[in-house]
Image (cartoon, rainbow, N blue to C red; front, side, top):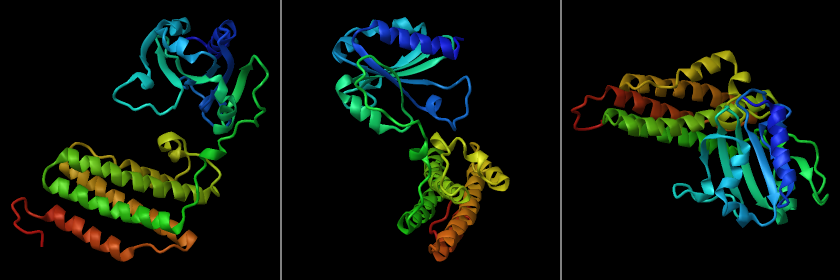
Length: 289
């Protein structure tokens, strides 16, 4: 596996040798002073270039970075609509385990690029025309304080969608139930993020997909969260759902008390009773009640 120095030297060498590349920037975890460093970190690189189309017309130009295990070019894919405007990306996993996510951006977007992400550093500026930018910080990714409306909507969505899980389980529709369990989980995770925000004065990021959540949650909450990941059995999903309800209730009440929000006790009790009722409902029942 090529070292970080070897990879960075190569990335910059390619840029220096190609007159179309006018500047190089880097974003992501490698620029984040608070991110955990490990061997799976990507190299999130942006080449600010002239004549972008000439790169796109020559798919083989990226072979200089090494032998690839697999690559994805999202802007060329029918499955995903382009999301980068006039930019073009090459997501490359190499045979040595290194990964480069390389984006080509028109040099005309240099000012926009330097403003759009606070985790940006400039590695190369051939023309000395890029604006100066402050030291990288993950502040933009810190959790935000909820409004009363956001809190109320999160509670409503959690309890509302939980009824879909129950319906799917009674019908023996495992995929439907699991899909809606994941929607319920999104609301649980949101509430847990707010708890962490309160505990840290909203001054940390828990990372993409909440990957650092375990570092900030109380152990009891983390252990309970792990129990919400269901196996492939119907009883397992039911147990996961009720554990989610318990953890959500505990966390939401804490958040509500902190911000003087109104927690929907009546709604929660009604839905909880419904969930338990459906779990015990005979498979040949003609009526719910």
